[in-house]
Image 1 (cartoon, rainbow, N blue to C red):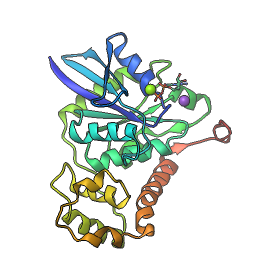
Image 2: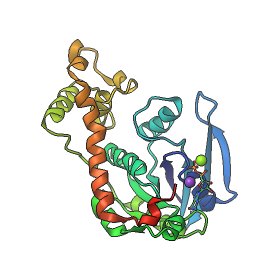
Image 3: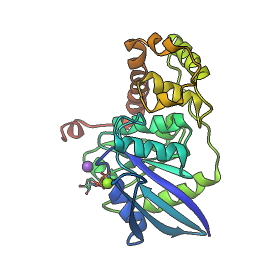
Image 4: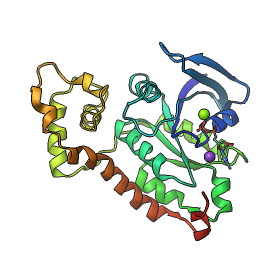
Length: 259
Ligand code: GDP
Ligand code: K
Ligand code: MG
């Protein structure tokens, strides 16, 4: 059969492992990430003519690598990208997860957005407009519950569909001044998976991304990056997300009081 590799990406505590267990059942095993003692959990399930091979990735908040866990997840996505990346988002507080989703789309990964804990969202009166989210995020959206099993079969189907489709990175416009610096830095970056993504990460202060700067680039190039430019990048992403949430997710007063 054809094997489709699937990475489960998401913030900590959003239900990645619960979904993973629901998807693969007992067909799972534990390995280690190369060179470190962090466990790596993998497992497989059969769907139609395909074997879906899942990797439960360490939880992260962004694709900027500042810790070992973050670097493991990020390097896996950069250097051995899965065929499909499922970004798991908490339906009850989706903003932080959508931030990660947007970064995965910028990197150019083949992404599916999963809004999990839909059982809780329904109970609290939160209404999620799936087709509106799909329009703004330009990725398939599946609403799931790892507790009730809702959406699990649909997710498998969407994984196969995504596998058959090619994707292109989302390009966010960071504004004139920031875009000029991104272009300058891009000139100084070695040929990578996605030079623009690397340049953006360098501007954001990612020390691992800086390793991709060419040896002959002007020494003072990093000094031209002001704090304002640096912080404008995540701010622009959050502005975009706030707008999408406002247009696609309706939270009742009751939902807002849930902690
Ligand atoms: P991970 O850190 O992303 O792997 O998250 P876990 O799978 O460990 O889940 C974190 C917590 O959320 C656990 O207490 C789960 O029982 C709970 N949880 C996960 N998925 C769901 C869901 O779909 N609905 C509800 N109500 N709770 C969930
Ligand atoms: K939770
Ligand atoms: Mg987990």
